[in-house]
Amino acid sequence: MIHPLAQRAPATRPAGATRLCHTMAETTVVHLLRHGEVHNPAGILYGRLPGYHLSETGQLMAETVAKAVGGRDIVALYSSPLERALETAAPLSDKLGIEVVRDARLIEAGNLLEGSTVGQGYGLLRNPRNYRYFWNPLRPSWGEPYPVIVRRMRSVIDEARQAARGHETVLVSHQLPIWAIRCAAEGRRLWHDPRRRQCSLASITTLTFDGDRLVSIGYSEPAGSLRAGPSIPGA
Image 1: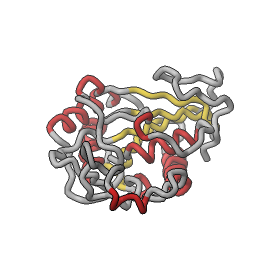
Image 2: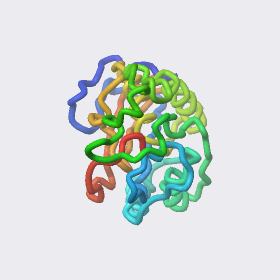
Image 3: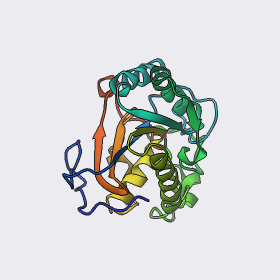
Image 4: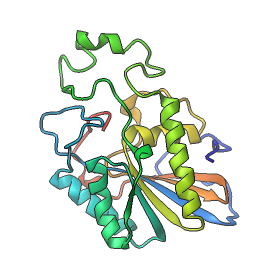
């Protein structure tokens, strides 16, 4: 299972891996890949809603990631069952010649506000109709509890790590699930400001294990040059 790092990484540390050990017995690497940009001209908080596909830029992001990591020792590829995640996994699947395993544990976090329009002015936070959902930001009261997200992500990561022992594996998921499990692994509190998540579109959060021990967490943005600006939270 994933245990907190022996040394908590500061929230403002630079991107890249934090090494905590120098002698690696059996190294297994788990890459958590966030999906690419979604075609969403109406600015909908789509959450788990079906029918939201990658934009042209998102498709290019997926292809860029596949080129960046396709030469690594990746032996298994998992994905959230949502379209945007499966479409992000597709180019890597083609390059590696391995099938994508759909796993519901990688799905986007549940959100009572999905289907709402995210905009300026009277957006989600300023709309009085939504106030009833905001009574507990620590849980959070408007969606899937953080501990529940962490448990399901930990479960699928442990399973994927065992299947790829001594090699590498990629799990395609969504911003909040990836950030939540990273916070848990680093010993941080789970509640946070969504604007401060280090998990951009098509980014990779890398967990490196020495045997069963998590020894480093890295972060990279292979398709970062294609990112136009902030994305909608809960994507």
